[in-house]
Length: 141
Image (cartoon, rainbow, N blue to C red; front, side):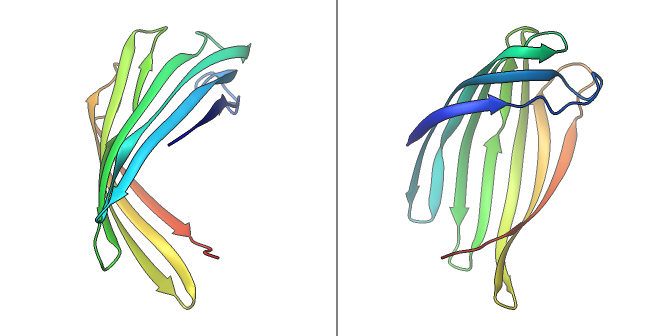
């Protein structure tokens, strides 16, 4: 279990790419690991307080997750990365299915992940699906 601040940085350089808003709010995570399973919930809420672009940010983020890791370090995960926009009164709910494999290249451990995303809910013009490929270099102690 953990809690702390969530920050929104104004990285959009154009209104078509996002909002130039600074924002902050609380975040918390609760998780449990047991017999290869990892499950829990991450959530936060962000309010904008400065910057350009309309409307102001007032959003709740919820990420329930469930994963299972095998003895060969293959992991299977499902989660949502749901956001509710309180200004636009609109949910965006992508459901993600991911498979992850730990490998070593020489002495370097690497995590490879492939994921499929399907949108259960979204605003007009939102995509129907997506793919995710992630490569993470690990540096254990």
